[in-house]
Amino acid sequence: MHAAQPAPTPATLPLAGITVVDLTRVLAGPACTQMLADLGARVIKVEQPGCGDDARAIGPFVEGVSAYFMSVNRNKESIALDLKNAEDRVIFERLLERADILVENFRPGTLEKLGYNWDMLHARHPQLILASISGFGQTGPYHRQPAYDMVVQAMSGMMSVTGHGADAPCRVGVSIGDLAAGLYSVIGVQSALMRRMHTQQGERLDISMLDCQVALLENAVARLEASGSVPSPIGTRHPSMAPFDVFAAQDGRFVIAVGNDNAFVRLCEILALPALAQDPRFLNNAVRCEHQAALKALLEQRLQQAPRAHWIALLEQSGVPTGLYQTVAEMVEHPQVQARQMLTEVTTPAGTPLRVASNPLLNTTGQAVVRRQPPALDADRCAILQELGLLPAVQAD
Image (cartoon, rainbow, N blue to C red):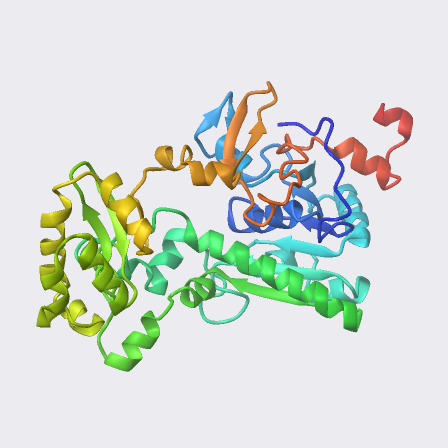
């Protein structure tokens, strides 16, 4: 990873001119700051000397470089600072003088132990926005406890509604606990920037991974309160709509998502099963949900008589929502994903490209998503120190 020849940040990007000091590591924080960087902010990643971001040691590796790290650290600069070291603290405080945003995901209390409590930061830098991301937030009985994605998926109830049975708990296949916190942090930071335009004041944002998971539980809490029934894992089907599931065709799986009675009638017509539309068990969505297992069995009897491409073509023509069930390897080659340019490339120091997910806010704008490759640890130290007036130009050379 390197900092050579970064592309300039276009002034048309919404966060151009905003500077972020990034104290985060692993995933929730780096996902937040990568999004801010993608949108034009200058992100200066402050890392622990010697080892850097913990994610640098997480596999898989390409030429000794963590693909995990590369996937969430493009468009950033890196400087290694020990915040317990007096000289490095001078550098850090000079960075804060120029910063609009400070993002950290230490365990609550750590930033304060380092001497950077919010009252002090706000007094010295009244326009600074501090985004603090943690497992449980800055308050509450669990606020000092450490957490990872697995912990908040379990505690939030997310895991309890995922998978195929209560006896086999299932984690969501991506780190949704981290990613949701990262996205909510971006929303919070941009809201704080808008508020600052009116008040000229910064603020502290308290983002809890557990809070963000609870917020993602869609209507699960509402279903619990309305029905008294505890939501449980039901596999791939929808709890309140049918047919809305993965189905087996002759040659593989695909999905059908029927959201209303008219779409169900069209589905029955496509499958040449008109009697199903008149069956008392399937006349409306409510009764279809009650008899979803019987309905799925009848539909799959028919669907297994032809390949999935045949059914998908007919369903698409009739406007019934459908799609392939795909592996990640199949997804990256799908023409829709490629047409939308939802994959981009970062490179290793040796120049080997690595495909990673792009930014869905920029993929169709014509803007370059990758302007700067993920940085090597401390790669930008000399340039940053020179900019701060802490390194003579001759030494930088």
